[in-house]
Image (cartoon, rainbow, N blue to C red; front, side, top):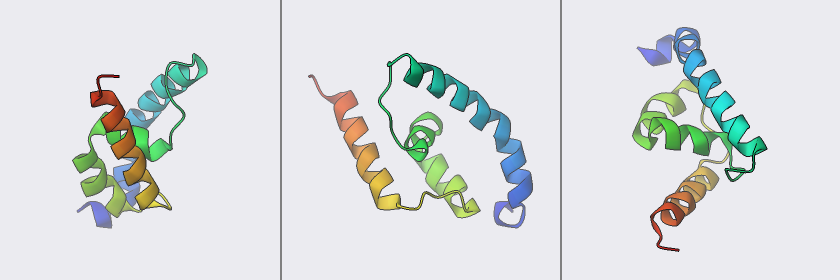
Length: 83
């Protein structure tokens, strides 16, 4: 149903995107987080399966999905590393 209701889906998700955006911007400004593509934060906050399965088909996919995939792998590897 989402493919046929792009405007409704975007409107329904807008409050969550805005809240996440405020949280991310505050941490970036404070130097607490690395500067990454917006889509990487979306995948990390909302879950990669959710983002790929629901958001990307709505036309919200990044211009370079391979770059996002590489960044996600790097971030998760760093998070799980002992160093």
